[in-house]
Structure formats: structure tokens, C-alpha cells
Length: 313
Length: 237
Image (tube, rainbow over all chains, first blue to last red; front, side):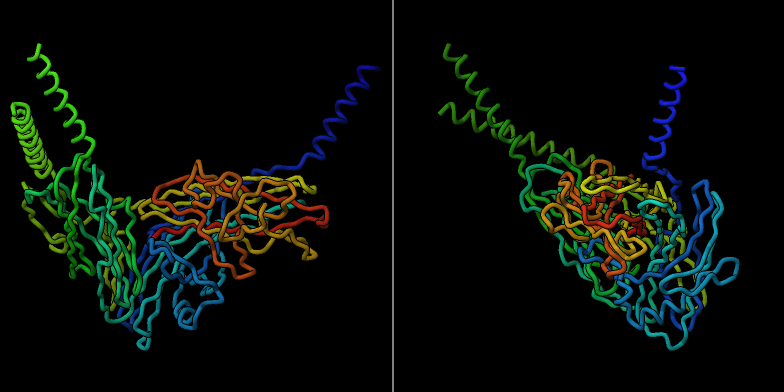
């Protein structure tokens, strides 16, 4: 009897604990991939631009997606990231242009959303090729439009307790340039420390696109020593710069890795944009390996001191 | 006199050694530097224009239609891997909330940059944690009452109430706002037209841990509170 009552008591305690312990649900998450990561379009109206996008469900669960088109501007730090416009800040130009963008699945328009859209269903591991159509009529204004296509998971799950429902969004950026392209860019900054004691040498680089249309820049930096010999080369990554904006290329992206440096060096920047126009700038910097010179000087003095002492005795 | 002439000799030898070292060293470097576009030989640069060799450019996917041209991807990135983003759960269950007992939960965000130039992850909530009667748990203002969706603050006291998040710095490229331990921010609130905040900016594939925290006061009406939080991953330009 005593054993039975103990078992009953233990069972009751376990049941109570299970009932009142908060549920921690490790609900399945989402995993999506998208390709390409950027689409650049140059068009002269009238034209019906057709391109594609690939979206894949990487998870083991089916997923429902909607999509939104979100116009963006360059971020305030000029770092090549996007800054989304608030819906309340959309202009009629934004909304009119976005109405011309359609996403198609098997030649069927999914919807023509501006703020929210309809469903795309992806089975586990399924990939879909979607078509993007942009209809540009003759009267389309000659200007650039920048927006992201963002696919959002649909989640209607609920709990009885306090909870946050999570939604995953993944997107790609689309740059559209309409009409005659007028490109003009400037090197706003190309600098490094005037005096360095050792490498690596980091360069500051700021490029301003003063034209109305986006540009893609590429280039390299050649470094010559005091004798005019080429001692280093830094390839610059391709950078897309939106119209009327500046791109600051991060110091850590423009680095000459050479460690031992001595003398005067000349860094020559060759920059190309719009596949034809080019820009050039050069700067000089002086490298004095203070640590090594100090060690050599001390070593020299020690050698002389030892020699003099040995001759004295 | 003898001392100074020796000093001069040693100095001269040192200068000669260093000069010879620089010249020989640089010659070797210059002979090795080359790629598809440029060849550097002994200080002379032979420059080939990129446009003359378009067929060998594996990365550019440019095609033409009637009155338009489309380029996909980055011209100088050779692979064509997709950009991917994973969120470890679709619900965050805070369980029953009791006054002055903060509840923390986490979500892992995994981003694979693919053939992008880095990326940002934006986050926002559709509203404050709210119940069916429109009572809400306010967004936290942290211990000193100053944190918001744009600036962080330390939130460690049990008498500071609200809802907020932090991004764990040790495992991720979270923004600098979270460098200080126990620093939290509010989610940007879409219903108040607050701008989406980039919570992660990175150039490499990473995993980040988002920690949610909710703490209620004695005055908070007992009910079920909920909201939606959206994470958007987008490649850089």
C-alpha cells in the first residue's frame, strides 16, 4: 500500500510539473535561397524587359511565399548597402513604376503587388524559376529605379500563450536604368597615411557617381617604389554605385599586404566605369621601418663597442 | 677619429645591404604579379582591356532583348552560388509571463553569402506584443530609459519592463550596438512607420543568434500577447 501511494504521489508530481511547465516549442524554421543576387537592366522604351529569378526551399517542410517590391536608396554610410523607403515615403513615380513589374510562374502572373502579394508554394527542396517582366511604355520617364524583390514566408501559426510569429524574407536587388545613359564619376578620396613604419598599407577610397544613372566601377592600384619598380598590385572589387550617390570602399578592402617597407612609394589608382571611361589618381607615401632601423643601429653600436674593448685588452 | 670612420663604414655597408635587399626583393615580386587582365613584368605593365576578351569572362551573364540589356550577378565573381538565409524557428514561445521575471528566447539566423558582395539582414515587428483587447507590452527603453529601435542600451534590471532583442556578438557580425554585454534594442515597429533596421551587415557567410527578452510589470493585464517579427536578408549592391 505504501509503495502504491508513493508511486501515485510521484506520478501526480510529474503530471503537475508537465502541465505547468511552459512549453518551449522548437518549431521548424525556414531556409530559402535566391539567385541571382543582383540584376542590372538598361532599357530604352518602349520595351518589355524579361528576366528571371530562382527561388529554392532548402528546408524539409513545404513553404508558402508571398512577395513584395521594395524601392530603396543608398544607405547613409555610403557603404554599398540598401536603405528601404518607408511605404509612407513612396512617391507616385515609385508606385507607377512598381505597377509595371510583374512576377510570373509558368507564364501566369502571380500578382501585381506594391505592398503585399499572393502565394508561391514551394515543396521541400523545390526550386522554382520565376519570370520578371517590366513593361516600359514609350512615355516612361528616362530615369533610374532601384528596388528589391523580397519573398516572405507566410506564417499563420498560433499559440495559446505569449509568442512572436517569425517571418523570413529573402530578396535580390534590381537596378533599372531607362533611357540615354549619362555616366560621370569622380574619385572623391584616395589616401593613406603619409608615413608608415610597416605594412600592410590600407587605402581610403571614395568614388562619387555624379551622373543620374547607376554605374559599375572596377580597377586596380599599382604601387611603385622609389626606383620606379612595380612592387605591388591591388585589384579592386567591382562596385555598383547608384545614380547621384557616393560609395566608400572600406579600408579593409583596399589593402597592400606587403610587410617590410622602406623609402618613398607611389600608389597609382586606375579606375574604369561604364566599360569605357577611366579615372586616374596617384598618391605618395613614405615608409620608414623604425623598429628595424633602431635594432640595426643598436646592433652596430654594440659591435663597435665590443671591437673597441677587445682591442683595448 | 678611428671610431667615427668605422661608424661611417658600417653605416655605408648597412645602406648598401638595405638598398640591395629592396631592389632584389622587388624584382621578384614584380615578376610574379599577373592575372587575366594584367601582366606585370619587372616594373613594366602590359595592360589588356577587359572588353577585348569578353568571351573569356565566365562570370558576366549579360544578354540582350529588344531595346534592353540585362546583366545578372557580379561580373568579377566567378562562381554562381545562390544567396541563402535560414531562420531556426517560426514561432517564439515566451510561455506564461510573470511580473519582474524576464523571459529570454533565441533564434539562430544563418546566412550564406553565395556569389554576393556581402549582405544586410533587416528586422522589424508588425506591432508591439499585443493582446486581443489591444493592450500591449511596450517596447523596452532599457535600464536608463533611452534605448530605441536605432540605439541600444543596457537592460539587466528586473524592474525595467518591455520587449526587446539583442544580437549575440561572439558568434556573428551583429551591429556594434551589441558590443556591450546585455545591450538591447527595440525592433523597428512597422505600425509606427519606423524604418527597418539593419541588424547584421557582413561580407562573409555567418551565423547569428538573436535573443528576445520580455519582462512585464505588476500592472500588465494578464492575457496572451503576440506579434510578428520579420527578418529580411538582402545582398549588398
